[in-house]
Amino acid sequence: MKFKIPFNKPYKSEKALYYVMDAFARGHVSGDGIFTKKCQNLLEDRLEAKQVLLTTSCTSALEMAALLLEIKPGDEVIAPSYTFVSTASAFLLRGATIKFVDIRPDTLNIDESRIETLVTDRTKVIVPVHYAGVGCEMTRIMEIARNHGISVVEDAAQAVNSKYKGQYLGTIGQLAAYSFHETKNFICGEGGALVCNEAQFEQRAEIIREKGTNRSQFFRGEVDKYTWLEVGSSYVPSDILAAFLLAQLELIDEITDKRRYICERYASMLEPLRKIGVLQLPVVPKHCEWNYHLFYILVDSLETRSRLIDHLKSESVHSVFHYVPLHTSPVGRKLGYREGMLPITEDVSERLIRLPCYYELGLTEVNQICEHIHRFFSNEGVI
Ligand SMILES: *Cc1c(COP(=O)(O)O)cnc(C)c1O
Figure 1: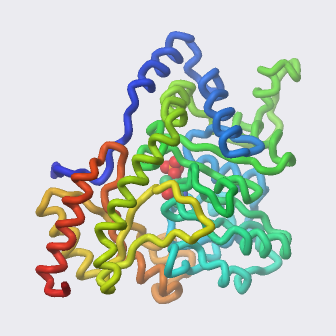
Figure 2: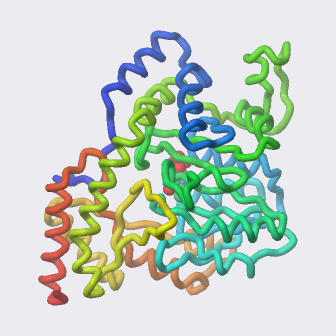
């Protein structure tokens, strides 16, 4: 079905085409060419990050983090269930046991007050996911990690250019992963980055990313041949993708501003409905700066959600929901999890609707979507 207002449109800048053509003309289309370097430098400067390495996806970056931390069978990883599969699968691939935690009902982020009860002497990692680009309570999470000698890997897939207490998300934990997938704010189709915030990881990260070899050092002339040093994989993206990405990263502020107008318009148009308790809107704590990654509403029940999605569909507006909690998915069940174990996650996952939010979406369209939502609730007789 074709919608008048689709759920997402990938942002395409014309500059991307020139950069891609340039990469092509240079004849360096494998990884780690000039555009990869430019993207990494831009991100390192802007985010004040020690080391940023472009990867083929955020999933790859999370897998690299699990390799860097030498996760092995028997190790335990604490993560939310209300997230995308890669948050957990990157560690499951190394044989870890995932301990799912429930989320906070306000930001829908990992509930930091429930983390400590899950810590055992086998706990190796906490993986906070900055849902919608809003920061988890990192001060408390880092404190718990420090007290117990645990590492923190931020799943910052959605949080490029967001801040927590003045610090960019992705630069707080020992390691972090960003996504440049088509559905995110800054994109190259499929792509991501690993952020290393401690010097101890820098060399090994390069090696793991290059199939376990010291090829990066070889190209810099630091060694006279390259060889296999540890278990790694193929995590380097093509410079063509980096060229596409650079064009977007150079427009970080412009893209963010555009998304801000959209989210602020949604918030102000829907505020009257929130005030009378018909729906809940995203909560951004005072100490968090948001990148406006996604705009969601929470309605009162699964039934209302299905009817509202249908209503919007009948007006040719595409809205979607997510996530099926990881702990009630077929894999989660196999791991021994059952419905009822994480009540807030289960409740939210049934009531949340994501509204269209993308660069090309005009404020007139946002107004229309909000009017459709108002009309829906007035037809329901609740306003
Ligand atoms: C998008 C996303 C990922 C995966 O990103 P890819 O780049 O597609 O691998 C992982 N975690 C979260 C929270 C995401 O939103």
